Length: 300
Ligand SMILES: [Zn+2]
Ligand SMILES: [Zn+2]
Image (cartoon, rainbow, N blue to C red; front, side, top):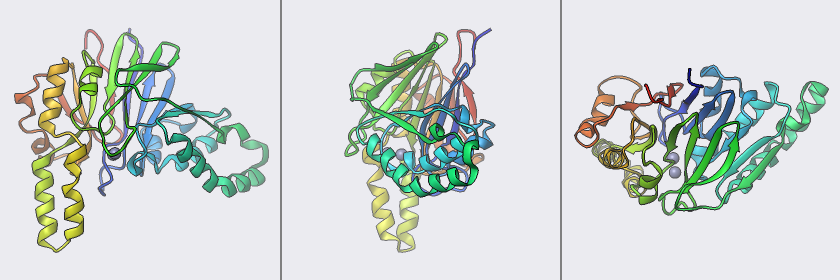
């Protein structure tokens, strides 16, 4: 029997508002270890909806400092603490992570004081402590975390002008999952994804985005339309995701961080991935918030 190794999708959206898809967030579950990967708007509340107690998460890693990957972090800290955490949270991320954590903790300072005063010893003071390690970027995957069979590596991706921006590779029980982070097509992601059992990749459907831009222009929302026109320069189109997955020999592909946002089910989901199978022969899945997707094993 294989150990549990799966990815829980908290949020499969982007900065663009969506009733179905909140900001980016995942939990890597490896045996009894739980690692949070990014925590964008709305993602913290999805942890409970996904059936996970926030206090079991003792490690968090961040890909980059865009709002849709970080702004629910203070809410996560509060949920983790008040659901019983008694040890500090370990955080890893690129340069900028310390500033982000320090800033949020500063904003929470009064709340923390009020809750300790109100609840006394019921809340452990260490449960709201955060220990940050900023990890230098490397083009090739380099390990920064190893515990109980779970190994985490980071690699730099191309989300310019967002520098640094990281992707992650997680190995456990002989299986490998790669998370792209936010990126355009880049050699370092192609290299890191070689032979991965599961690639979780951000995805942009350029044709569908163009339709949204035209619709915004038609109602006079020119600034919004113009901002949307900048999106493709630092994200990866679905056809390129499929080509990259084939070139890397990925076994299974899961799309998230979907731009434009689409409903969880229905014809737009089919349209989003239409044509990808011409470039990539393996299974393609469009993740939904609170999905739990196992990293396939040798016999899966
Ligand atoms: Zn993003
Ligand atoms: Zn981003």
